[in-house]
Image 1: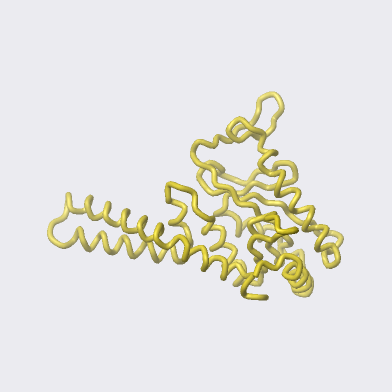
Image 2 (image 1 turned 45 degrees about the vertical axis):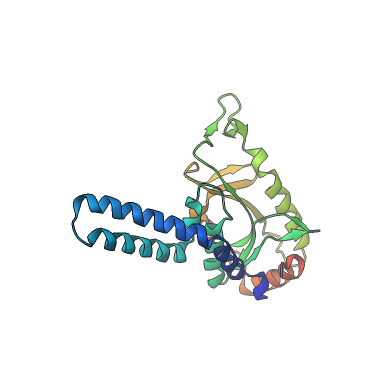
Amino acid sequence: MDASGSAATHYAALRRATRPHRWLMAITVGAAVGVFTNLVLPGPLPLLAAVLTTAALLIWDHNRGTIAGWWPVPLPPTRLAALATRLERHGWTAIPHPRDTDRPIATYLLIGPGGVFVIDHQTWSALHQVTTHRATGLLMVSGVPAARRVAAVKGAAAAVTHALTENLPDDSAVHAVVTVDGLTLDRARRVADVTLVPVTDLTTFVHEHGRLLTPTQVAALSAQAQQRYHTG
C-alpha cells in the first residue's frame, strides 16, 4: 500500500499538528496533580508526582491518541486515526479521507477481513442528548432526527459500493458507520441503515462481522480503492 495514503502517515501528520495542544494538556493535568499532592505530601514529592503524571499521560496518548480530544476546541479526530492505524497493522487497509471528484465523502474507508466500512466521524458534546421520540420511535439527537446526521455517510457508502463493484462480492455490503467521540453515545445504534458507534468501540465493531472476505478479496479491493481514492 502506498504509504502516502496510509492511516499511519495520516496519524503522524495529525499528531504533529496537535502536538502543542497535547503537551499543554498533559502539563496542565500534571501540574494540577502536583498542586493537589503538595497539600498532603512534603518535600520534592509533589514535583515528582507532576512529572510522572505528565510523562504517563504522554505515553498513554502516544498509544491511544486521546489527549487531543480533551482540548476545549474540537481538533482533528486523532483517536479515530490511532484506531485506524492499529487496524492497519493487523491486515486492514485504512484510507484517510477518500474523495470523489475532490469532495470528501468520509473520514476513513476501511477494508479488511470483516468487510468494507465507510467511516464518518462526529464529535458530540455533553449537550447532545440522545432520546427516542415517543410518537414515532425515531432516534433523536438534541431534538433532531438522527437520520439527518447519517445522510452523508449513507450516500458515501453507496458511492463506494458503485466504485468497488468490480471486486466486491455479491453477498458483501459496504457498511456505513458514524463514529461518535464523546460520552453521549453509550452503545451502538442503528439508524437508516447506518450504525452509530462510540469511537472507542470501533475495533470491536468491525471484528464482530467475522471473516467475510478472503485475503485475496481484501487485496483486490484495497488495490482498487487505493487507485480510486488515492490521497497522496
